[in-house]
Image 1 (cartoon, rainbow, N blue to C red):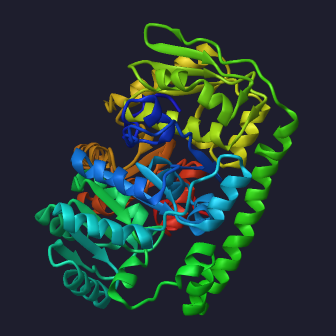
Image 2 (image 1 turned 180 degrees about the horizontal axis):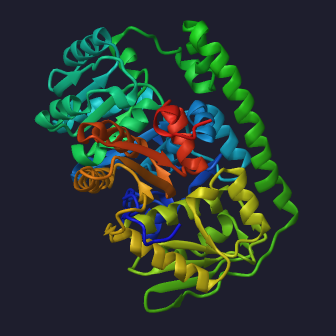
Length: 515
């Protein structure tokens, strides 16, 4: 489509920032303990997990609270990963988390098979009580959101009895509704009025993760965590498994026996899909590699005026990542775009994929681009296996890479290009980070043209990714236009956008060509 048409250009989504040491880049987006050695993350089905123990996770969260910057933490289990395989938005949320914790013994077992083992399970149901104790000691302000009204109230009562010094500044159980039909303004008002340090959200996955991604920036709460059924545990309405079952990784059996109708089919389906996908990942990224040792080192970083370029080693695995730790840190810092040559990479493991994801997050958080140059078969196959093709930008050569960078710079300008008789075009990534700006520009266009133009088409063909906040803008535009005597239709949605719309159950409402 010609760029002479009316166009709203939107900038990249702001993603979690990272602190700047080699250890911090390898170990995760937050500062590690001074005595820690670099610990590269491991990607399970495409999701990078932070290699931390329970005590280290608590210390990371304590650092987040002290920073006073907004963060969100995910405690992902097998069900999260299986859902993320088919839910593009949830997958992006897990990739962008400030701290991704392993809440499932099968995930620990899988990481051992991949040769970069997670130290232990960090269950949300164990983490939250420890954070409650820390909050009572440090006088943190705590807010409990979600769960049933009865569970929420009982949890508050029991916590106050157990921790008299705990400062619970608020609790609220909103009426049960689909995500985009919730009274978001009322929920935000209640939270912002109390200014919590810790916000525990219990809406269930993926609703709680999507709600958090929509609002954590604007709420400004230092740490927001989706806690699932933990509020029911705190309320005493649901029992934890015996200690021996927790230690042996069989707690899921206890949970299933408590709620067999709800959980039996889900657990069986999750284990079936997870086992098959993980065996394929292990075969591709670990077992086949044991006969392929030895590789050339990465080339030195070449620096240009606005970019830096590096040729990766033939093996992009845990060993090479540790060896080239300073090089990876240099790529992730500074103010230049990154062109990463992957054409000679003949093997990449789960650690290599995890580091690429972390590098992409770090680059995007500072408004820079990461371009993968001519990735070979091994890299392309690994990204496809982990369903990460849409997370990275790929170019055949440096010329194409610089054209991509220029295109992203144009997106960040967020300008409206005149051309009144052409469709309105959205482009880039439309997320919670820029949804209000997109809505402002779209509303202005509808207002300025509705006196003579009654039929509007919004072209989505240039939108690479959209989240629930972006879908909310589509709904607002659809409902707002008739008040101005106009009609808005959306067209040209990519498979990624359609995935988000379909799982929001709004594809037929918002797209004229929904099938």
